[in-house]
Length: 420
View 1 (spheres, rainbow, N blue to C red):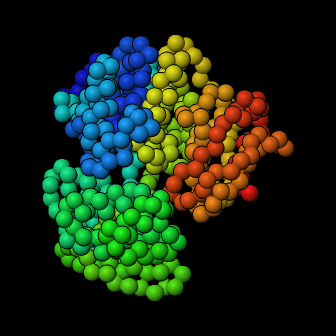
View 2 (view 1 turned 45 degrees about the horizontal axis):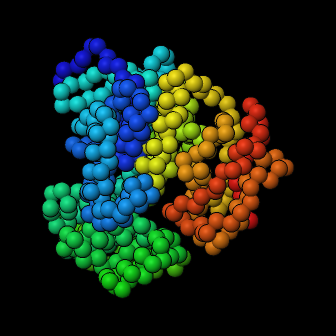
């Protein structure tokens, strides 16, 4: 493989061609930033929406409801028409942020080369945990997929995944997998979740129950996958009862349980928000590395595509400010959450910049209806109000008008977010 010895120079390098990356690159060009390069490791930009042949995309960002492939095409077209240099089949293997310009090494079919960028926007997204990460024991059987793999199998390769499927998870993406399985001619025979009930919207779950009538095993885990060379059954065990049921199937789809695709940022030494599994960012989506921003589901796995696109649009102003000689924060105020909340993003405040959509994103590990959330600093109440719900795997939001009243002095007291 050829390696170029002379680095290419760009104003902005966006790593990742999903909705957040395409939106960020487009917005940078619309602000007049001259040389914007987007690199994507897949053969086509657009993210997982390219393979999601169901509607529901684009409402918040493009103001119209679209199917996944059309939505991906809309953002690809917008980026190219705005003048973004979009390069696919390009994998960023290294990010160096120690000295001087930010340098990335990109491997493509044409060879490996270095690129020096004035600013880098990381938009590498997130992924579902595979079987190995979930520690599900049993035979090494064929027929076990994540939702993303299932969608590529069904809609790109046009291969029927199987005839009888068990879906693991009961969140939004789980029901997307059910739709894909139906389109591919595979029946869903059961859905399994460790939660006490489904975590998708109630209307989705009820509609699915009417249409497909598969049983939902709550408070349960898949404790064994059996079959060689292909899956023949799974064992489902109640977490509180200990009772095990064997379900005959030839397909298992592992949905949700998202983790940020953070390896590039981690290797570069970017500070991480360990609970959210992605880089720690402030309200302007700045990381700990000067000139490096992180957006989309890399920082809050997993939001919908249109929310990620709005992240991308919001970051462009901060990128332009940095390129124009703006400062980069080295200190600020931590935002800390307490049980039943598990993480918050952004988790660091350095100035009065309003975060994307004017809110912080929260996750919780318990169900609560209309709980009161309080934001405090030392003995001061900054904000108190009710959120519609707390549901595991689904976002809740806290508005941020209180940022203007925050004491942001270096070494200042952290912000606490609690549920009452």
